[in-house]
Length: 340
Image (tube, rainbow, N blue to C red; front, side, top):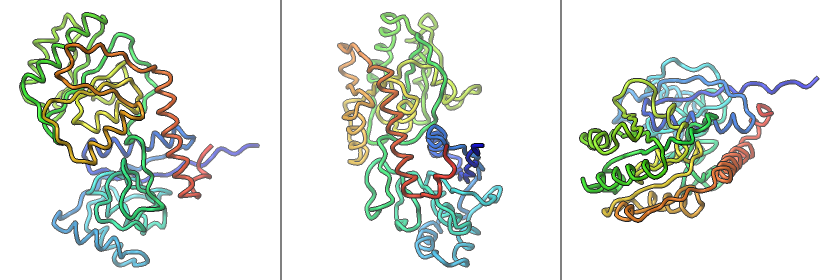
């Protein structure tokens, strides 16, 4: 008789920031897709005093083998509830990194951190997931094609597209005329393609943008809103219904959400663009590998967007996720027994 694999008990640390929590849950989805059966403990995690963070990082780097230092680090965080012993500790976001390493020390189990390690030493994590290589992490740095985000099996609606609008940030500066041009183009797309738009804003979006989109994308074009302050279904639950996605280029989290679904993706940038080099490199890598198409907002008047083949795109995305999980198992062989 074949015995079913054991469940992989994961301690997922949440700092309460949706982008970070979504990344961590997204990586659990990657594991599930690759044949694991995760069981998640979500632990709310915040440092008790933020000014201690540099000291906590230094303590994390020397905590190996020291139960006292490990307990001091854990005592410096609010962990609600305190986790049961897991097989893996997982988190994203700087406020969780020291607790992540301390819990791995406390339970003598492997750990995965998503994002920049800042000044954490390489030996503090079993695996570090980043979009670009992290200095010093030579053997345990998993450089991913795109950041994790939630996966959905919901079939898209053939006549629904999504328009994800960010705002000033990451070196991108938008003018009123940029928003006007995006929404006017979206109106023309709705008429030409007989589609409905799901329009979502972010916390960085200008306050007047919602009303502007309502004005230009009237109800006759199937206009729907999904903004951070709205009640009802969150964007993560509504976005899978979109067949194609258009997103402003300033929002890395929104771009990665679209790629992970996966959906054909067009990203738009304004004239004033000066992103940090690492951000620019990530966007260029996405474009080079076919995960998105790019356009300037000023070019939208003459743009006829032809999306990528959705089936081929989905296969490419799934292959990239599988490759990352396979490399993780090579780094942490003990995980293999939890996979089909």
